[in-house]
Amino acid sequence: MAVDTIVSEPRLVAVLQISDQARDQAHTLLRLVDEASDSHMSAESQAEIAKQQKHLFTSISHLRGLHRNACISARETKAQTAEARQEVDRLHLQLQNLYYEQRHLQGEISACESYDHKYQQLPLIPVDEFLAQHPEHAADDEDELMVARIDHERTEREALEQQRQELLKRKQKLIAENKRRKDDLANLDQDLEKFIDVSDVAILVTLDRLWNIANTSHQAAKPILELFEKAP
Image 1: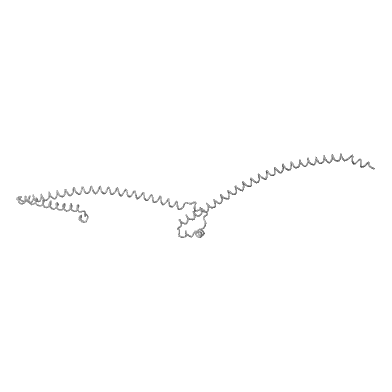
Image 2 (image 1 turned 90 degrees about the vertical axis):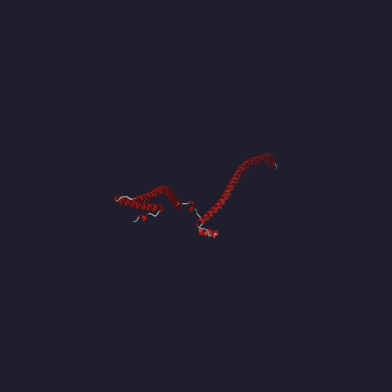
């Protein structure tokens, strides 16, 4: 494969052209020198050799300049390549970090999807019954519908809790009322027992007094009875 078909960069193509030109000039100069050495060198031959030498030196000088420019361009290309390689390495490292973060996030998502959430254990009413009570949520997606059902359950439980608190207050009130009535009944029993005790004593005292009066009356009436008995 020819070099011309491999090299396409303009500056390198120019180097190859000047190199070919310098080579041809060197061959021409060598041929002239060989011809001049075989015979007496004439002034015309010397002039031609000098002319070819100038052309050759000019081509070599031009070739050196192109070589120097090619070396500078090669160093610049190497520097740009190194910078591009560093950028590629940085981007590759960043891509690896993104892959790692992606795998981490996928793991977190899988863990969240497989997590046994507490809301899934809530005794929510069936979807059909909820939609029958709240038809405005019929067009909601699955997540919005779940949030609405949880809000509904929270509202219902708050209402039940309020009713429970009210019933608890009524219960405490009834317990206090029953205790007060029990205390009143206990006091009443004590008063009744005292009254019964006092009544028994009063009855005994009264009976004793009546007995004494009856006995006294009998003693007073005894002489009168004797007089009636002695009467003819």
